[in-house]
Image (tube, rainbow, N blue to C red; front, side, top):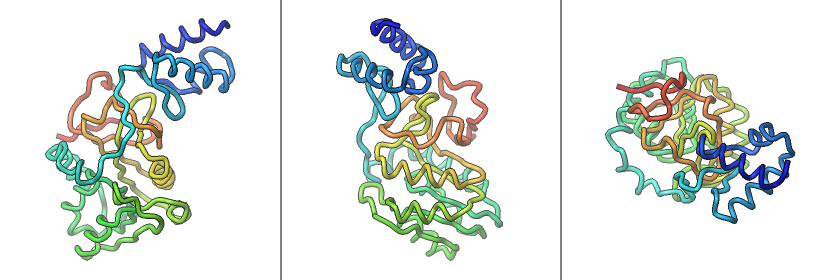
Length: 247
């Protein structure tokens, strides 16, 4: 297949799906991953698409490359976050061993966990302090503290998480996309989320409806890898069995 023909197919696929992965393009046009990556790079340089980790998104699609601080995020979609968090907290049973990811929406869950008999592991210092102050059993993952999100990252945290087996895990995300999956701007934080999610029996991503259709730099899980708890229906995501609308 000629180069221009591959370009045309890639752009047509992006027009239909808004985001693509290298793997799906490779399978569609029956070529190598290295060829697809070169094509995506060339189209990115020409301004025809936006290259992201593992694939590309349409040039007019929402791409987030920076990570807002906790202070910047805490007041955004506040009512929606509280609604989602309250429902998420209701899913926790006394016998559960829970992973609680760093983030403002997972942080809202703390308001509803005062009487929980479950045990918790978290990579968020503030989450751990709040849980401990409430008299709950909590383990804080050790490692490097990332200032902007107040999350612990790094190899030490990864090694610790790999030794745990969680019954339930609750995760925050910066973006939700059918094709790019769950994404976050920072590669180190993405690796923590990915590792923790792999150790969970039941996985929940807490994301208000504003997160849908947004893509950050790094994917930490596929779209189907977790149940999504959200506040409203989103156009283009109807019929997705893993989306749970919290009323």
